[in-house]
Amino acid sequence: MANKNYNEKIDQYLDGELESEEMASFEQSMNNDPSLEEEVRQNLLLREVAQEGYKENMRANIRKWKAENKQSGSKFNMKKLRIQLAAAASILIIIVATLFGVVAPQFSNEGIASRYYEPETDLGLIRGNNDADILRQAFENYEQANYSGAIPGFQRYPDNDKALYGLGLSYFQIEDFDSAINTFQDLVARDNIEYSEKAEFYLLLSYLKANQINSDFQQLLDKMIQDEGYYVGQAEGIKKNLDSFWRKLQ
Amino acid sequence: MRIVKSSKCRLRYSAEDLISAITSGGVMRHRAINAVIEDLCKCKFFENTVFKFVLDNGGTRTKAEEVFEDGLIKLSELLRKQQYQGGKIEAFAIQICKNTWLNMRRKKDEQLNLTDDISSMDSADQETPESLLAAKEKTAALQEILSNCLDDACLKLMQMKFIEGFRHDKIAEQLGLANANSSKEKLTRCKKNALKCIMQRNDYQNLLNSVDFHFKKTTTHGK
Image (tube, rainbow over all chains, first blue to last red; front, top):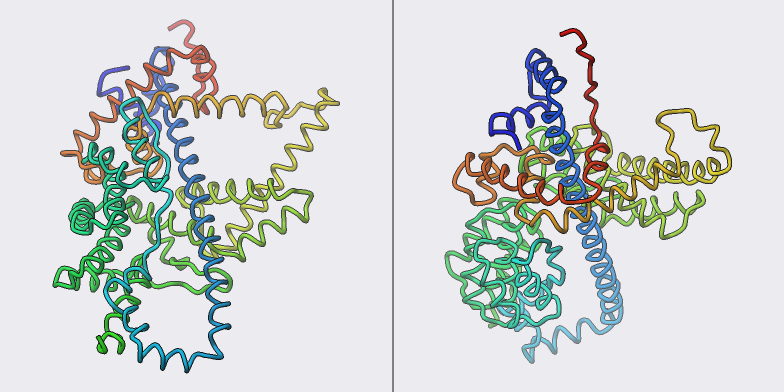
């Protein structure tokens, strides 16, 4: 490859960032120097590879989002059916539930967290050289619900945000909530656009599971509601549950 | 962010917010485009409309799935290139999917017709069975390069720079690199390693010749 200056010039040329005079001069250089033209073509080829990778990732995301939608759709129908079946006996159920403390536990920290928890089964594609084999194995373990087996693999990649996300979820699954909290706190602090909102949500659930309804939890909950991000509905629901009449019975 | 209850789909971005996020570029644009695609994936009306169009126009469910995915990928590209001017996002997406299916069908028809009548291929932009095959082979080659010549970190960096159009300081921030220079150096290293790997391929020269490059050589006789 050419020297650093030429590298930058090629990128500027391909990005259309050269002024007309500079562009004319660059094209003249290409005319005179076939090796420069070859380098420009090499750079274009690399961009096509990146574009193909983008399409591949987007296709994987589309399939994941569609699958999530199908799952939630079937959940919705079951919920609707349950509501219909329960309608006739609702008053009786409420009375019995109140008397025997069935409803109230659902508004415990544990109950609220379980209600809002949605398992993340597919963490996405892992690609790369041999160095990534351990990480790939960790993701495979995770997807096969072997969370304890996945943890050591994820721990080997403390700088990889996707691995850190997998680590936090694995701790959550094996109910090591203190470790889950530390891991998700770390991930939130990195402010990665792909994982920050998810990490905040699972951090919130980890606090609930660990019965840590402290100022950190409250600040995070308020922030999620104020930011109106992807999980705002869940955050508002959790807040409503925490303020519920049923919790006061406990 | 407020949820936009448009006529048929539940979208997190209004047309106005989407255009504003796309114009801002960087992280805002990335987040907005992903949110739109995700919301459309979860919109039953959108899915049903696309599937009905394909099935009513000679397609199968498998083809409809393909159109749904290719159409949304095309939508993400058009949004990134700021070719969305406003109006209902789902209507824009449906039109893209319809065009995707019509193009697919046209190519298929041309393949059938042109196999019988090669002499009619006089237009430069017409796709021949050979060119369609070449395109498929090229996609396969690009996917092999993705698997063998680029690791996740390099691919992410190249996508942020060349596709998302992030500045090097933003890339450094997102990838936890020290500064813009570290990002530039890493990009140079990634390109160098990837090229070294690509140049070992038997089809290297064909791949170089296949890139979409509009530079026209001029003759310099007598100079």
